[in-house]
Length: 308
Image 1 (tube, rainbow, N blue to C red):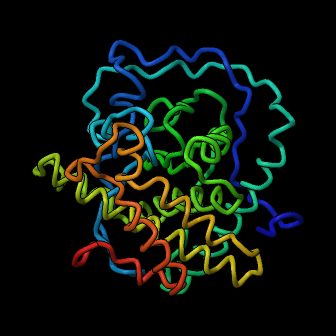
Image 2 (image 1 turned 90 degrees about the vertical axis):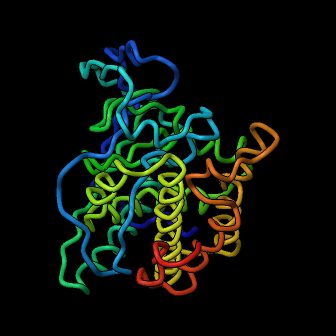
C-alpha cells in the first residue's frame, strides 16, 4: 500500500505506554471482558441510505478464536465484571511502533475521506470516529479494552480500539501478512462505526431481547459481513486514490479467509459448529469484501436481504 507521505487523521488518541490503575476484570472473572462490552440502549432508529440497512453490531473482531467465548454473551452485559480505575500515568510509547502508528493514521484519514463523501451524497454528515491506540489494557465506553481481544469498535463512545501488537499476531498467528491485511482489519472496524451512525444499533438491541442465541448469532453474521463489504468499498476508494500496490487486494482477501468462523474454529478445536458462527465463514467474508471492492458502492452491501 502506497501510504507513506500522505496525511494522517487527527482523530487518533495515542494511549500506548499508559499503565497503572488497571485493576483487572473484577469478580466476574472468567476471561476477557465478560459483560464489559455491550450495545448501548436508546438512540436513533435505523433509516435508509447506503443499502437501507437494518442490523446489528458485534464489537469484537475475532474474540471467538482467541477466547472461545461467544462475543454476543459480552454484549448482553450479564457478567459482574467491574470497570477498572481510569487513573493512569502516560509513558512515551516505544518508538519502534511509530511507523505503524503513522500507517494507522493514514488509513483512518482515507476512510474519513470516503465516508465523508458518501454521507454528503445522501445529505448527511459523517461523524468521524476516534481511534484509540493502547498497550495491554485501557478503559473504553464499553468497559475494559484488552489487547487479547483484538481490535474492536465501541458504539457507546464511537471509538475504535487497537493494540498495535495485534498486527504482529495477524501475521504470525493468523497467517495474514501484509500492510493491506492490516488496513482491511481497520477498515472493517470503521465499517461498524458507519453502521452505528446509520442508527441500526438500537433496533437490534430491542430485537435481540426476543431472539434465541442461534438467531442472534445469525444476525451477527450479517452485520459482520456488511462491515467486510464496507471495507471492500474502502479498498475500491483506495484504488481510486492510487494507494494500491500489486498484491494488496489479495492480502485483504487472504485475511478475510483466515478469520472466517469455520477456519478459526477448525484451527482452535479441529471442527466447526455452524450454529455458533457469528462473523461468517471464510467464503462469506471473502465474497462480501469482494462485493464491496468490485462495486465501490455501499448500496451493494445489503447483507440483510436474502441469503448471505
